Image 1 (cartoon, helix red, strand yellow):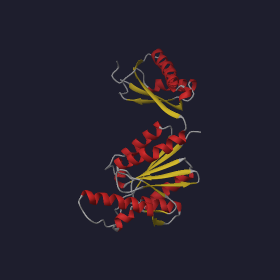
Image 2: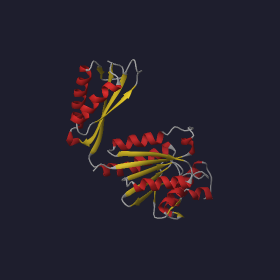
Image 3: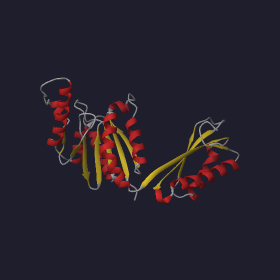
Image 4: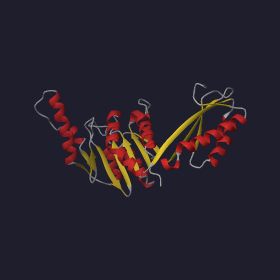
Length: 274
């Protein structure tokens, strides 16, 4: 069975269009390459009730993994852990291990700045205040620890929103979990490009190829204009190496290319039509 995942991104800046949601794109790509199917991406505001509702809704669908990003910092609008605690019906408490991680980071910063003392202010302690019965995950780049919890077969992982921190934690601690869950499955993809055929004419050809090539997904992406069609056709499969994914893709590409050319279209192997 294929491992699956949902992503919940937290932040008003995403909803008002101030910040491009690169975290969702990066996480989706990395999870897919690791053989995990991303089923849904949800974006919510910095609101405890919204975060809790999105988390509860995701948990009801019982994915193997839920990853959230954003809202773990020391400021008033960092409310993700409060929302997760509400979703799980758990209290927030200072986690000694997380507090040690935060203290260690600030001590390192103090050493760099040649300061003698480190004060654990309330905003700093806030980053170590986690829902009960959850575990902190080391942040190799920033200060706020990530958080992990296991709920009825779902692993919930709460990551910071700063891209460098999110990516570093993912690569160090999360990617190994996803790889183990996906087993030997790997994601392979290829693209070809077609001219002189409209997407409406391409549609039945794609249907035919997908029927004849089980496990290969084909998606068209128009890049030209209606009267001058230029279409990228993306083919992908997620199987084990033993199932020869490259051969599966090449077989589908050969069949589709032949069908397109018979329909009067032209097929190219790259965007530059060479």
